[in-house]
Image 1 (cartoon, rainbow, N blue to C red):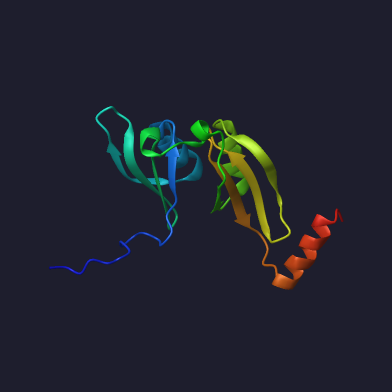
Image 2 (image 1 turned 30 degrees about the vertical axis):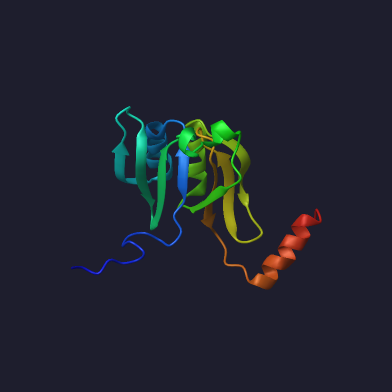
Length: 155
């Protein structure tokens, strides 16, 4: 008998699970735009995706077609999403432009942030919100606090 680990190998402790309208298209979008690698796909008999997994770097995201009868509703069904996924990439400008060209809606354009990241936010064609960033500067907590105060006061 083997030792079963309480946290499966190759999974972080926290793994987002996204419900989408058209998981097949979402898998293509995330692989093409975010550089994700598809780890697995489990189709239902009706062709919908019951469960899929992608990896973005060392992170895992699970996703499936929505199934409202089971409480699994996509942002399109509920009229938005209360969460955003923050993803670090090597070239935020390139990834952001590709996301927009692939049908995403710009929420906040790419800009340098007071906390040392260059980032921008978009809503993907499936209703999920993403903040894409490249770290461009190491900023101390004190400097970050000073910059935040300045930014929030309009200075």
